[in-house]
Length: 442
Image (cartoon, rainbow, N blue to C red):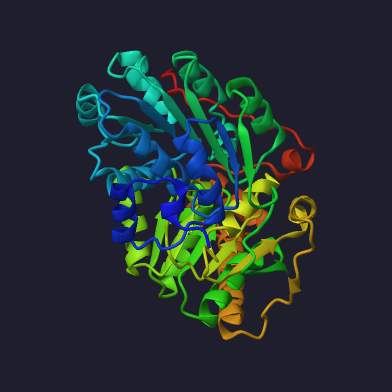
């Protein structure tokens, strides 16, 4: 059996692992740690939740103990993932004096600039905010010896390629580069070919492999019944539940409905402030919120030990994102459920997902007999009926008047002090409006 001690880690690193409760290395850690310590370029492909963060943080710390100056750069696609990496670095780097500066958006730049001026050994950043500091002159990459690209496929999917190219152009050519990803799509492979030198490829799970212990199922549901289905599934158990929606507006709307139904709900998307996002994550982790409704911003970097149920309220447009979303449950040795909602318009997306994961997702019938489902459908039907009634009713301006066209014309004419000529109206002739003039005295 492989142990952390057999991977070439120092006594300080082993004591840090013991304090953190790590007992046995995962497959990606077994293969990546020795290569990282040796200074080799690495492409690591493994399913979400298999320990990729420790697989690069541990060799990073080993190589930087006793070194001064900013020697390593870690790039991540989201603020949450960058914060998670910073927490791992603080945990494993404390005994060796390896410090990190977390550089992310949504918070003030002054504190980050002060930490960068301290020349901390590792900079952990999202690409956009790092570009801001480079433009201001508060960050320098001239001494970088190690570059880590975490969730590289996600960074490219999110449109960070121009920022990545700008950042890499400022890095020394002679460096070690480690690229980690849960999937290895064509764009990622091309990016790795151009920026890595003779990399060792580690693939402990096939690209597109979903967590084995995830109980996957798909519900074919009309768009207007998705909310009712979500309420019915939440009523079936009490496990923590992460719900993914396609847009920020849908996340807000769904969270509001679930809260009215009595569930403890938090929201996580790009329009939330950094403090709101942090509070939502912390509350979800400690159980203050049973439900977290999020957009894809939470598909990566959400380090929660036990998420019992992941609901894909909307299917992702990119099939690889299904792997990341489902990967939020059944992490490590845990098990969990993954429920996908597929409307008629989303069936092509479902076919793409099943082609990627090389299997058909089992179909489940809608729980139409569930009291929560029936109540939600009835409530929605009542709201729609009231809306139709409000639209078809008389406007406020004509409230209290007869709705007969003739009566309205008579009223209008009498209010103007005269009457309309009905024969002119019948002929479709426009009514002649005379301007008022005072009578000339004779």
